[in-house]
Length: 164
Image (tube, rainbow, N blue to C red):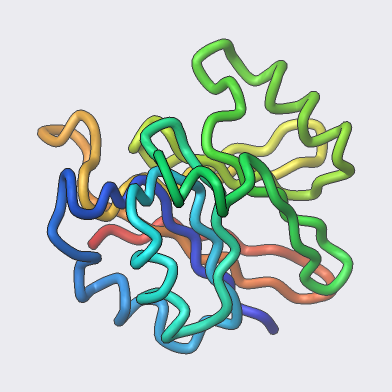
């Protein structure tokens, strides 16, 4: 089994001074971390890499060096599952664009951010996962800070949203 940590919308240091310690506790022992953008500072990748290799993409709030160094979309394979990661797959225009991105890239899973709200949904054989935000959930009076984990075997994927 492989364990993949999912995180997005950390907004360090504009909305939080640091990644919450609970994230490091939850991600302890993961094999890989996917960050779905809006880091705002590359040091976020450096900190997370102390736990496991990190694949990160840039988001709409990322500027300068972050935007130059990180792609808008990336993907990895875990066993035979292809996992894509992007910040904003057009979530506010419905799932049609998300399904198109998944199909064009032969994805089994699409990890995204942007809304700061966690969500898990399955459509047309693709798992769509938004881990939410560990630092700035929206709306904060309804949503708690979250990250997500994927437990992956050759046969199945088990997603879990975790409140911090």
